[in-house]
Amino acid sequence: MKDGAIPMIIDSHCHLKHGDAQRTEYSAETIVNIMDSVGIDKSVVFAMSTTTSCSIEMARKAVERFPDRLIPYVYALPSYTDVVLSQIEDAIFLYGFRGIKIHAGECTLAEYIIDPVIDLAGRSGVPCLIDCLGRYETIGRIAKKFSQTKIIVAHFGQYLSRDESLIEHFIKLAEGYDNILLDTSGVIIISKIGEAIKRIGAERVIFGIDGPHESPDLITFAQTELDKVRMLNLDPKDETAILGGNIANLLHI
Ligand SMILES: [Zn+2]
Image (tube, rainbow, N blue to C red):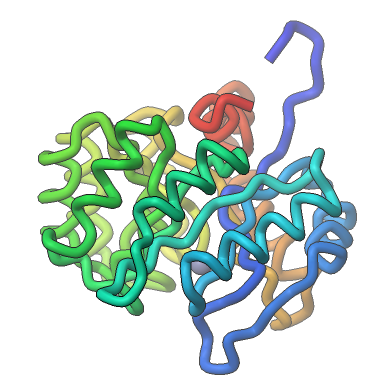
């Protein structure tokens, strides 16, 4: 950020298509309306619960509508019938996608499936945003083997976790591997965010909303996730980094 410039707020975790039971989809317009309402400058967008090629199509369409507001990630869903590595490479090198989304609920994180994707991310200089469903041993394995790949651990390890000891495993991992970053979306033990900042530094904690979400309503949900970080009363420099600076650096924005 240049001196005097207003710091950007970037949501690093926004779904064009969710992994919920209804596989809910949100239009680029809806997402940008929410952003405007709560004061978010840019959002990382991706689709899941679909093929890699469809995720590319959906994110490209959204970014075409709002090129200055939305940043595309490609969804990695390796399978036997589909060659996704070349599709992911096309997304990054032809279409300017900035990262890779991986979800353990749909894609096994077994090394023979996911390691080629993690390796490609490192070689391509894009991060992987991984929802690992609490599997800290797997994140440790991946972070150790692919030290050049930036791993953004969604939800500090597990969505809406009330298990402090589980979150502790992920903070410890981040202390051990500096290629691990922690995403604040869906973290409900908010004190753990403050604790992580003290232990690993603000530069490896990243703000995300994991929306859109209808409950209680689209705007309140986003606002609550944003307030969650602001309520930590951080040093302004750290808050600015978490709310946008860190992901901007990571994605070369
Ligand atoms: Zn998500």
